[in-house]
Image (cartoon, rainbow, N blue to C red; front, side, top):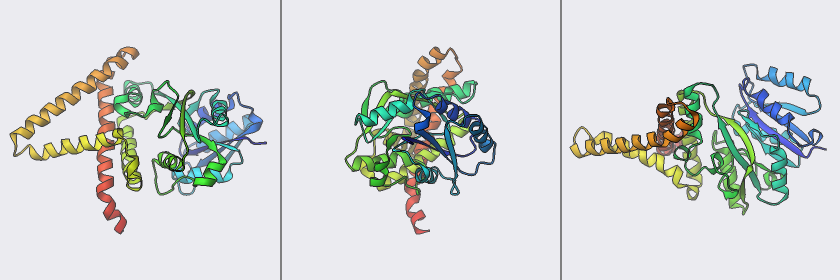
Length: 333
C-alpha cells in the first residue's frame, strides 16, 4: 500500500537528481509504503539516464517518470499529482536532498494536525566549491537577502505564510485544486494562499530539514530572482492582500534609486541623496557579510555576499516593477 507519494518536477538535472534519489532511498520511512513520481520536462541531458540507473539498482523503491510536455513546474506538479497514489503528498525539488527523517517528519506533523500543509527548513549549500557559489549560498540564507522567509534560517516551529515544497493530504488538493499553471514561478506560494484562504494553516517545523543547492553563478542568481520577482508581481495582482513587507521593500528601493538617477542630471540634491543612499546600502551589505565570511574563513565573501544580496534585491525588485507595469499591455494581447 502506498502511503506517501513524493512528487518532483524536473528538467535537465543530471548533476543533482541522483543526490535526491539516493537521499529518498535512505529515508527511515518504509520503502514499501512510498513512491517517487518524477515529472520530467523532456530533459535533453543525462537526467533520464541517471534515473534509469537508479531504478535498476534500487528495485525496492518505486520510481516512476511521467512526461511533462508543457515544461513548466506547476504543470509538472499537476501531472505528478495525477499519477500519484499516496494518501500523503510530499513535494520536493530536484535541487534538494531531504534529511534521512524528512518523510517521517512530514507524516508525523500531518497526522498530529500541525497544519494542512507542512514543511521544514532549508540548509542551503553552494552548488560548486568556489567563492562565488559559497557567497550566493550564504546570501540565500541571510535575513538581509530573504527578509522574513523563515524557512531559510529559523530554528523555531511556527505558523507561516509559506513553506518550501510542502507536504499535505491528497484531500487538500481535491478541496482547493492543484497548482496554478498560469504562474511559472511562485506556484507554491499561490497554493498556500488558497490553503490559508480556506481556513487552513501552513506549519513550519525546523526538525524537518533538507539541503538545497543555491545557484552557482551571479548570472544564474540574477535570472532566478528575476523570475521570482516577475511572477510574484503577477501573483499579487490576484491576491493583493497577501503582500508582505519583505516583498514591498525591494521594488520600492529599486524605484527610489531609479528615480534619483533620473533626477541627477538636473538636481544637485538628487546626486547627494543618491550618493548617501548608495553608501549606506553598501555599508549595510558589507557589515552583513562580515560574520558569514569569518565563519567560513574566506575573506573573498566580503565581496561576494554583498554582490549576491545586491543582485537578489535589484533583480527581484526590477522584475516586480516590470511585472506590474507590463500587465495591462499583456492582458490586451
